[in-house]
Length: 317
Image (cartoon, one colour):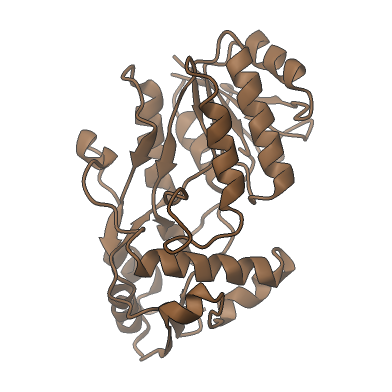
């Protein structure tokens, strides 16, 4: 049995990890939250802890008193405040005698690539967290890269804890803004599949590498577009953004972005879409070799074609 703490476990990927890790009674899972109680029902092996992220010593004591062994962070968005909280959590975990492992909030691609490949202004915050982890050689840690989340391409029909950050292909509106040619290979993974792999990692005694790659499926945006058009029974309105435009931060909008401006500043969201678009065109999303999938072939990951067809064939809004 492993005693696990999840920072950010009340929503998004963190909630999906919670659901998976709490299955059965093998593990005890603690949700680190500023709320005094969880806003949803949980099984008996799930507990709630309220850390003070600005007090490293207090957090270390909290982790130690509850005999936490593995800490998983899914903190978002990547703001200075969130990154400071994660860095303090790392220091607390390293200070707590019971904690042996830590997964920082990465869950996408390698943000150590240069600006020619990943021009995201906020990646500096992610790098700072890794620099803190490197200060503690006795603390085992890994960055999990899973490409883009597959969940988005089933929304709103697919029930996911993720916010509807639908990228580039708006299946509901039958519109698409494709980075580059659309023929670049991209790794996609369903959050539920990510959680299954994380469970395997937590349960394994083998030392983690500093980078862990997962790919549920590897397809191009043009392939997704073709499946989406077949499922909706109509041709989409499609534009392509050049690599030059993307590097300049210019990205075409799709209707799915509009409601997100109430959650994220428009500049932040479009910067993210442009930056990820560059990463797709320059091959950063094309994971090759040394995948965790190879170690756990019993995990049958969800494939893009099956997923889009299952949630969009014969359906409108």
